[in-house]
Image 1 (tube, rainbow, N blue to C red):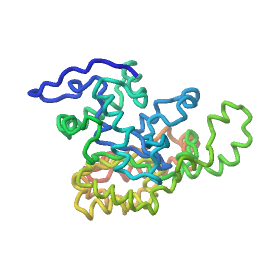
Image 2 (cartoon, one colour; image 1 turned 90 degrees about the horizontal axis):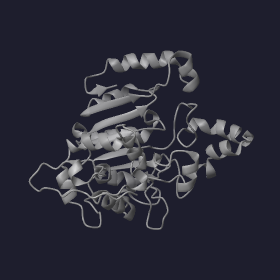
Image 3 (cartoon, rainbow, N blue to C red; image 1 turned 45 degrees about the horizontal axis):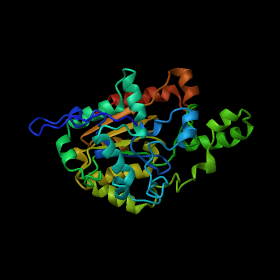
Image 4 (cartoon, rainbow, N blue to C red; image 1 turned 120 degrees about the vertical axis):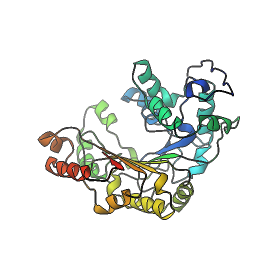
Length: 328
């Protein structure tokens, strides 16, 4: 953790992120992210701040994962959304950023910036500072790091149900990988590779299960109550387009009259885009569909098995004919 002096905020100037603190990131004030197993995290990049097998061992693979006061991961099977929003972990991160410290969870962004890259911290803060008031966020932060229960942006990973088993994936994120893992893992002899490919207790650890979002009415009630504040819902894998709860959420946004101020973002393999989904998208302010493609033709068919490139081409043509509020 690095401590640097944060400059004083001039009450009369338009507040910019740099004036708050050189380590400020807007996300802990507006955002929560889930893992497919129900663990909550600061963001998807924070969860990758221990990249590599050695560091992953050092930090227990849980860097960026919110912790409850008992030290266990904050998992939505055992905790609720709003309790996690202002738990000690979140309060500590906000306090650290305001005083110019770098939380361990955020090392990946700062390493990228040191290398001259534009980090998630950079672009998310720039994007959201044009849509929410930084001054309001800072002034509404209590001394202990608590903030009002208004969540603007949620990253949802609704389990691992998926229709592909890409070579770079694992059973942690794709249900279709489970059969291959069960056959392959016992045959691995290299200890480093075996450790890298572990899936301890089939992911069921510290309250985690891949069906955390099913029959979890407390979570859904709290999320629905946040819809008036919501500006972006981000979906990633599993594969949201084949997960029923994803459709239920979109329908609830429309039913409650909030779709017109919500942007939808997807990381999707694009294999299944039913007419039902296209009709729902028409109600939302904007849809940004990030189509996951690693190669073309036969190489795609190998990497993103069992997809077929001809089917992906057809889906791209179909998406190209969608209304202007849908970007691909």
